[in-house]
Length: 172
Image (cartoon, rainbow, N blue to C red; front, side, top):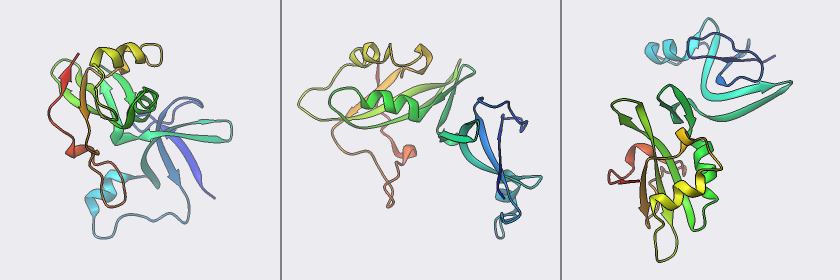
């Protein structure tokens, strides 16, 4: 038996259909990390394991939307990187993309994107903004862009290494 709950940042279960962190519990679930009491305390709460995934439950279906670490909190609004990346991938010429948060004095974080573009010319930030206007809420549209020709950094398993992204960004 595997129990699944969706909880808010305070650890309280949210109503069906609302988004939050996925918690799981099972008699067969490990009790913690071997010789890592700090990691265990961060990930386990009263027999529940915090998966680090963001999702929602609708009926009997569990929808996984993103990783909690890949969520940007911009002015109190949650921005899921996977949602923004999906919209950017629809832009002609984009062959790879990564969205991440950059520190912002007033908003906490702002949305930034690194895009690998094929072809001879780069789009402008304004081109991307206009393209994304009908696809994303305004607060989810990146305010900083890096246009690249070289591949985005990935680890040996092919996972994007967002901490290694370029520091050079172009403002709108």
